[in-house]
Image (cartoon, rainbow, N blue to C red):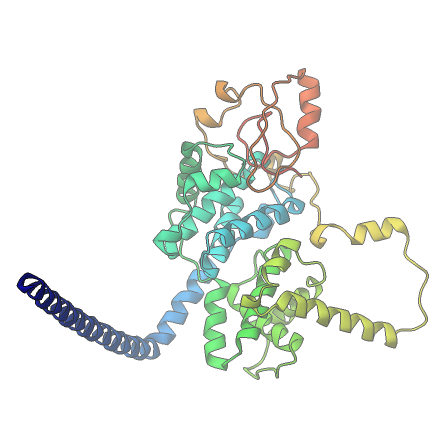
Length: 411
């Protein structure tokens, strides 16, 4: 009996000590959390004061970077193999990859900026196009995103149907960096949008609609050389009009801003299905559905106010107007004054793993377009040279460095 009583007393003491230790740890953690919160408040206040003091210098620097890192669509026109109708396929892929890795909004805009700047400086073969986009995504994520969200090469390789090894991604990434002289920083449209939203106190709904419009613009040549600051202001003005919000009187608009606003409004009718799905979620205020409703209302108003209906359009004309994302096709001819339509070499990366004589990839033939993360089915059928040329004209193998290799996207 005495032994039992001793055991009971020991247990009570043990639990009391454990409870006191737990309380001390809780108080210590609470004190640390309060101290961290206080430090963050002080840091935020100092940042705000510094921003107010140096805002003019910051904006001047951003304007300079904006001009220095703006792609030239006219130089991309010189590409002999890369054509504008291919762009929506690659942008769809980048948007899906960006969403899959939960990257920051500015990472997507920086990715497309790096892609377009590279295409402005180097000749790109169509079988290299998607890999350039993957390299741009890797660089942009490493530059400004969280480390735990940066895509792994094997993950991107899976999204590209497993066509590459790590060396190919690394070589292309290094080639993009060297081509751009390691000048990665770029004030994206998201940066200017956040400034305007904070200053004008726009709602989250307006911010999401503006982001949707800006991402629609990524698909079109018309906006490749548009300054992000102009794009941010025009997209916010258009978003307010679509959502029925009052317009902000923030000064006179110049001709370029007016043209950008008008051109944006003309490209809203056929958004990418991938992009519309992204912005149909509650997280983005379901703005893709609201834009579709707004356009339907405008079309109904236009029909009611129009003259008697005109005869139906010719079938051929309807087919032309339904062209993919209304992105214009570019002819294959060279730009006058440029020999053979090519710019100064070097072109896309050189190396043994990029050559057509790679023994590991011989015997593959391009299958039809596959989903985002399929397992490619190799075919060992060989064709005579003439028939291989016909095959290469029918399918654009992206990404692939090897003739007859499995494809991740076909056009």
